[in-house]
Amino acid sequence: MLKALALDVEITFAQSNIEGELVDIIQASINKHDGIILNAGAYTHTSIAIMDAIIATQVPTVEVHITNIYRRENFRHVSYVGRAAIGQICGFGIAGYSLALDAIINEIS
Image (cartoon, rainbow, N blue to C red; front, side, top):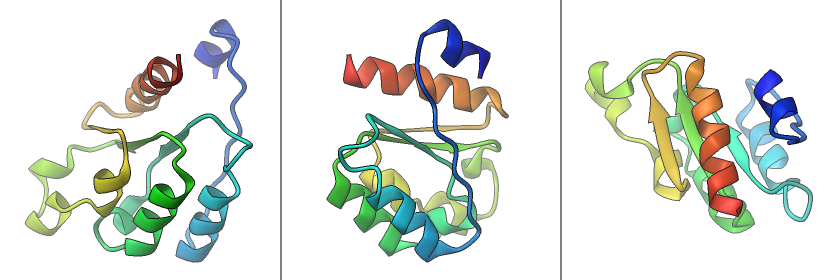
């Protein structure tokens, strides 16, 4: 949050454990937000609906995971979100969100 203040960037936070609500949040970003930083948790590996929502909105999206999903179970190596995102950051803990913010700012600048 401090980084966003220093960069004069406004951030809106949203959280849900419900796939459909995440799709609604992503779709609501059209003409409202310049980028999305998304940690979809286990939906990363299963949700074609979230992937489709990201593609449909065309809002630059960075996928973030606190852990390195490629050092975990094989099923976690598949990312539907990553197929729609401009990039993926994983394995850097919560610092990944700051890195994602840099990536979004770089993308829209």
